[in-house]
Image (cartoon, rainbow, N blue to C red; front, side, top):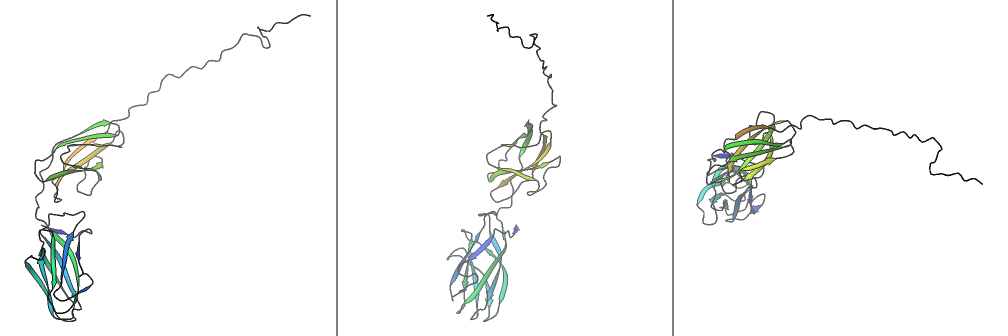
Length: 252
């Protein structure tokens, strides 16, 4: 299965990219990926461009390290720019090796268009998905994980309303629960509101299973109950104004 290039997929050729490297020298090209699979790559498709070679020859492509097998070549003539798209199997370490087979120097550029996966089988979907309201702003999600040996986790996405997310980028990402977790709590929701979820099992090769979906409504805060109004009374004194019962007038 071919996957198109992502912004995080690069090939590094040292010192080949943008630099002239001498005759019979080799430059390792390792595919490094941050968000795409690191181990599930069988081959890369790349464009090799030879610029301003000083002598006739060719760029020879090997998979893996120095003991790798020769898999392709890009012939060139002096002072002519040549480009070719090739598919190069990677070695056990995920690399290929490029060798300048001429007696002169060349400037070599390499651009990866994508890679081929070795594992294209997704895990089985989760089962027994249950979503239950716990409070006015909290929903509890529970499910049963698949038994696939390469299963690594479940990605949960949420949308407001009765329509669940339909893709790996639709809606809001709640959490990616690593195996063997089978429960998650979604906080900070709106009271009395319906939410829909898509739960996608995946493996370490970024193969996603068909999402299991579920919908639930958070609890309502309930009606506002007004209690009895307190009665405020002003106590009136029957004591005449200016009379002080504790004051005694002394006669002279």
